[in-house]
Amino acid sequence: MGALLKLTKDIRQMSEISAALNPDPWANASEEARRVAGLRESLIAPLVDLVNGGASINHAAALLKSQLDAGTSDLRTKHLVAMLAGDATVDVLSVPTLKRWLSGFIKGGKNSLLPKHTGRVRQAYGWEERAVDLYNLPGKPGYADVSSRLIQEGFKDATESRVKRYLKALPATLGKFSADRIGKHLHKLTRQKFQRRSLAEVLVGEIYAGDGHTADCYVAHPNTGKPFRPELTVFIDIKSSFISGWWMSESESTVSTMFALSHAMRMFNHVPAWVYVDRGPGYRARLLSDESTGFYSRFDIGLIGALPGNPHGKGWIERFFRTVRDKHDKFFAGGQVYCGDDMAPETNRRLSADLAMGRRQLPSLKSYVDSFTAWLEHYHDQPQDKLNGRTPAQVWAELTPVPVELSMDAIARPREECTVGRQTVRLHNRFYYAEALALFDAQKVDVEYDLHHDSHVWVFDKKGRFIVEAKLNNTIGVLPTSRLEEGRDRRLAGQLKRLQRKVDEATRRRDDPVDATSQAAAIESLAPAAPALPAPTTRDDDFKIDLLTWRNDQ
Picture (cartoon, rainbow, N blue to C red):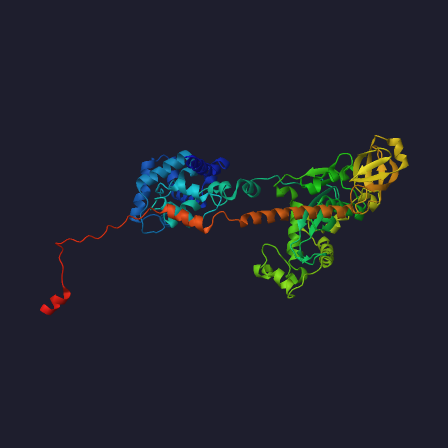
């Protein structure tokens, strides 16, 4: 019943929407209806003059009818009648019809001459509501599938042609792009109104949009040589569509985000006012967004978080990644290592086997970086419609830099808050010592460290003033000298742990609880026992024939 109410409501809204937008019946009518009304008006125009001159409507209509019957009407009138009838030999006009047109035109004008015919009324079969329910399932069944299901449910007259004709006539809210059929979230993103954003008041370099993208190409992993898809982290200026900074890494992470933004800042000596990023850990981690020691707060960069599951908010950078796929990745290395969803399946189906047998060879990661760098220069020099025919490089040239005023090493060094104790600070299971820290015993300080080396750190007070450079005293356990290597080791440990869980699951599945004996017993328990056949009985009065004696007698 709910579907029927929704169907009735949607059809009523569809029929009323044009009338609501255009209350004038003439504007709301179709072109054919207005054409017919115009012909009728031209035909009865002389009769209107007669009525205005004192004649009655009955006499005026009867006069025209008599002239048409006698063939004494002028050529103009005959032509109008022929156009209205579609055939000059067909008599479609009668005195009541002419009287109705005349009376209506005098009272209501030309709108009263619009045809009122609504067409043939469709026959109801009883399966319409069920057809709408089936058609709007998330599995997106086709017309033939819905018809087959209706017939299976007992609606024998639900032929494919009838079902298809009915479903195609439904309003858009119940059609092939309805919310129930394609999903409410996708319907909201693709079919409903969204707020378009204007960049008229945004300055060049004011807002960067950042995101990560896994390349749609296979390259050889630098360590293993196996097929590998690098992760590209990009920051784009939303005003000019200029790629201000990017970084290539093995996977999206906080470090790759910081390196990409650092590259953008030092390359053009400019600090953006805002960065528009995802809410994922790679962009919102404490290393970046902490109010006290985070990378963004150190340079007074505002953070705008994109709404989860809403690609419209990141349209600038998502469109760039689509351009990278179509304009670069599809042509890299002769187009033979592209792995997008529209790639010919047979090309990469046996990639691992071909590599093992030496029939194919993957390009290196360096070759992909060099190719992307060259293509990016070409991209910056291409005119774009959204830039009014200008290139990203031309718009980016209008940048007024906000200087960074720090060296590249200082930019790429993150900070964390620590507490001084016994002239020592502890950071990541490492202890750093300096005599000057005795003046800050039991106080909180900001410790700046190098991602690549752990031999020393830089200590600052809470007002940002440099205190001392503390040296590594000792470590807890065996730790690598590079925090990046430590992160790789931690990731490897997690991968091994997940693989071990898969091994344990496969081992447990090996002991199949259903064996052949239990299956046979289950089958026997399902079948009823066959009744025993009665034993044969022999009676003295049974009819017997001696075949040998019978044959000799014959």
